[in-house]
Each structure stands twice: as C-alpha cells, then as structure tokens.
Length: 123
Image (tube, rainbow, N blue to C red):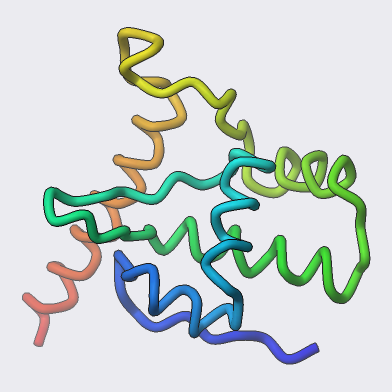
C-alpha cells in the first residue's frame, strides 16, 4: 500500500482531508464519533479544520480498515497503542475543564509552530 504524503502544514480544511485521505465527509464524521481519537475544530464561520496529528490518525485508521482489515475493537486498541489515550467522548464544556490529552495536543501544535519559526529564522 502506498504511503500518503502529508503536506507540511499544521492545519487542514475538511475538504483537504477528504481529498488527501480519499474519504467522504460522512466517513470522517462516523470515525470521529466511533473512535474518538481526533477532534476537528470549527471556527466562527463554521469551517472545520483538522490538525496534522488528526490527519495522521485518519490515515492510520484508513490503512487499518482497508489494508489490515481490522475490526472496530482492534482499531481502538491499536489507536491506544500508537497514539496514546483517546478521548472519552466528553467535551470540555461537559467536564468543566480542559483534558490532559487536549493540553498535550496543544503543546504538540505549539512545538510544531516553534520548529517552523526556527526554520524561518535560519533562512
């Protein structure tokens, strides 16, 4: 199976993710609810954005379903192994605080930004 190359970006619009992963939006919606391993962000205009990490997870799920033909339970287990804790399905507004996983994702994104800025400074 050929490896999909993810462009050097931090965020991706929903349409970009659909084209990159060759998936329908309904599939992304289903996987988001079923696996709770990625959480796209919706801006004030209603546009949906995915992080680079989200795209990596989506492509991995696609590989596991298509090539490896794992069932849902096996995929959930693999997500825990490869990507750590997956969301419990509770939103920040329900829990009253930001989850540790969300903080880790934010830190990862900020680290990526710092790396990109450091590369620009060297140019």
